[in-house]
Image (cartoon, rainbow, N blue to C red; front, side, top):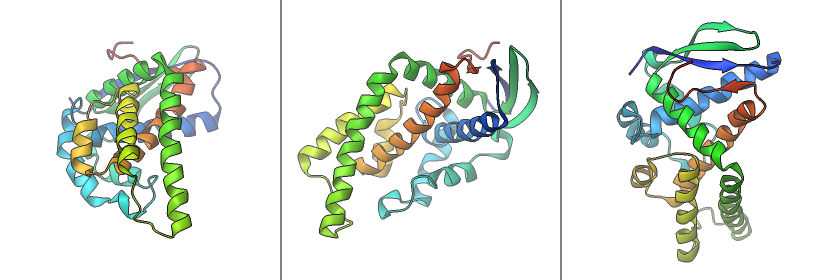
Length: 215
């Protein structure tokens, strides 16, 4: 399903900064699913291998910049464009995009908002593991240092839990592509931070995302 319209419902008071941040973060979430959620979004199967081949995160490059790679892999017809926007209470934002991806993100938000505290705890545990690894690498001046076996098993377990809490269905395929628990985990952690930011718009009553595409 491509180049159709998805309506995001708007409410409450919005600042120009709200609109700017919302647009940027929504696009990042959309592009993540477009390129990596190969189990739930058919178009991702055409991009996941190319994306991860273009950008080898394990070599110390910034995870923020992976979103530039995602962006470059979105087909012209699937690139989100504003069709109409109506600011009132309530209002709406109609986007022309790949509706499969938009609907999947609506489901992601529903799953995340069902247990945000549990997902946050999983994230914190995973973050602690890799923060500790970063400290050891710095102390030993050994950038290639890996998690030991027990830590790797725990990180994989937490990564699977985080994927579940974010409604990300393609963790096994992502692991097969990256062949690296750290890389897969850090991609998911970056995704978590962006899902959390969009979820704040839902929690504050400023936006809602119909999971069935109906409004």
